[in-house]
Length: 219
Image 1: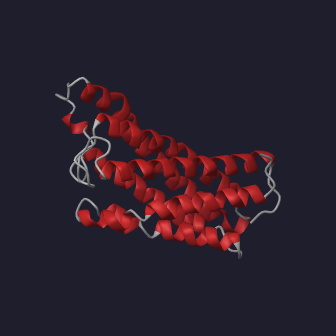
Image 2: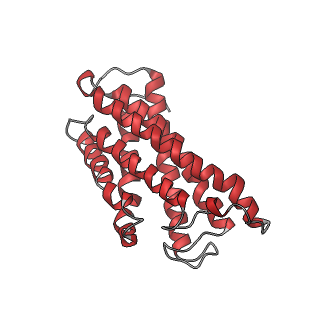
Image 3: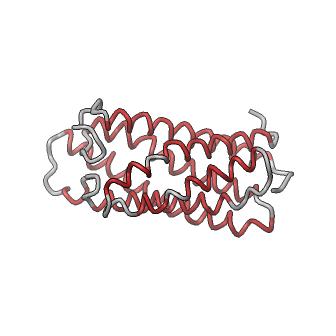
């Protein structure tokens, strides 16, 4: 990796990693509550969310898209010249991820949830977010598949030992969840393996925050 980084890169990398970690942990806690039926749904991964569930689940998820994209741009700046092709690819797939999931979640929070709260779902059936059985759910898992590809490429940036090795392993582990994310529409039970994202992703971003912190960012 490049040893000398601008203060802007250090700050962007550190704070985007922190934001991504916090948003992902908030989502994981909300998802556990949702599957337990604490947010008004019937519980389990196949139940449709209530208005409360959509708000609690998708707000941190929407913010995560932008945080992850900035983080991958920062990783690109961190990469050595020989490794920038991999970090650049990570940025490309992170952009695709952020674009897709931002569309899904913004539509849910600004169009679907208000209409659900008012009891006016007629005409928006195509935009309802139904696990394993809706257009936007398919778009969502495509987005997270692209995130996995992005972390696979980002893993190739880190070739050192110690904290770099840890980052490489967690990013690679998150990337290897790709088939379990992408094929959920066909095999619903794959979601249980894909749920390891709750460990691999926040662990990855937490380690990246440490890497940028060690690079000398002033907090």
